[in-house]
Structures are given as C-alpha cells and as structure tokens.
Image (tube, helix red, strand yellow):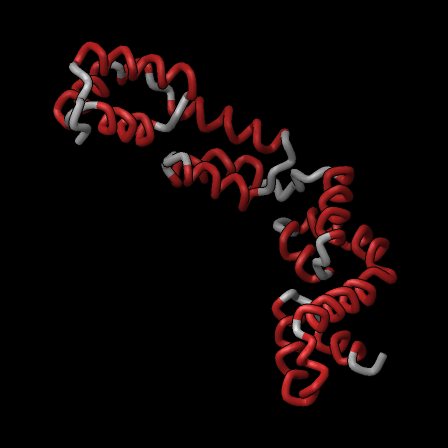
Length: 202
C-alpha cells in the first residue's frame, strides 16, 4: 500500500484520468489504483466507475491496431498479456482472424523483416520460425526466403564463424577441442548442421 495513499476523491479523479488517457485493461486499472490508494478505496473506485469500462471494445481496438501494424499473433498475445488483458477474451477476438487462416503479414513487411534479420546474421530456419504462424504465412515466406537465401545462408554462416573465431582466437590453437563448441554455437543460431560442416572445409 502506498504510504501516502490518495484519498477517495483524488483516487477517483486519478482513475478517470488514467483510464481515458491509456485505455488499460481492467486488471491494470485496478493495479494502478492499488498503487495510489488503499485496497478498500481502490475497490470502491473501481466499482463506482465500472459502468464506464469497456474492456471488450478496447481489446478489439488494440488487436486491430497491432494487426494493422503487421504484428504477428505471438507478438499480439505477448503484448496483451503484458497489459493484463484476459487471455480468454484476447483469444476470442483473435479467433476471427485465426479461424480463416489468413496471413496478416504483407509481403512488404516480410521483406523488411527478412532483410533486417539477415543483416543481423540470422539463419533461414530462424527467420522462418520467427515469422511463420499460418499456412498462408508459409506460402508467402517460402519464395521470399528462397530468393534472399540463394547465397545468403552460406555467407551468413561464414560471417558467424569468423565472428566466433575473432572473439576466441585460442580456438585456432586447440582446433579439435573447440570445433564442437563452434558447431554448437552455430546450431544455436538455427543454422543446419550439413551447412555448418562445410565451413570447416572452406
């Protein structure tokens, strides 16, 4: 409980300000009230303004906004969970998108994400796992990944390999001892083992 708890009227005013400024989940609003006031007043304020709360509409609005911004389902679920919205309500609203199995990711967005992840040295498998959620995502992703990774996969592996060596110069002095560790580091970055083997032969 806040040692300088707001009195009821101030807490009531704060609740209205906070709600209409941020449109939070009911749980987040109650949490913020309890940070500012005592438990009894917080519950009373919450009940007194409950007729103004429209959580279902807020969930719909926030999810629609995320989808408009090309955020995938994993991201949306995570953000809504962080904001303390009820998971069941979130899933009910997402169902209208998921049940149609339509990809919510545009080609332009996928290209930008692929280019960003490639620039960070991410593997084809990593990118696919990161972006693919529906069958339609896969249909869009596969040709794009084939296009981008015609030569990039090998180049990415070599870059990661050289980065590991440069950061661990002693690896070259005890090659056989450290070969397995290099392999493990590359596998952890989602590169295929068959491709990793080639880097030691290059």
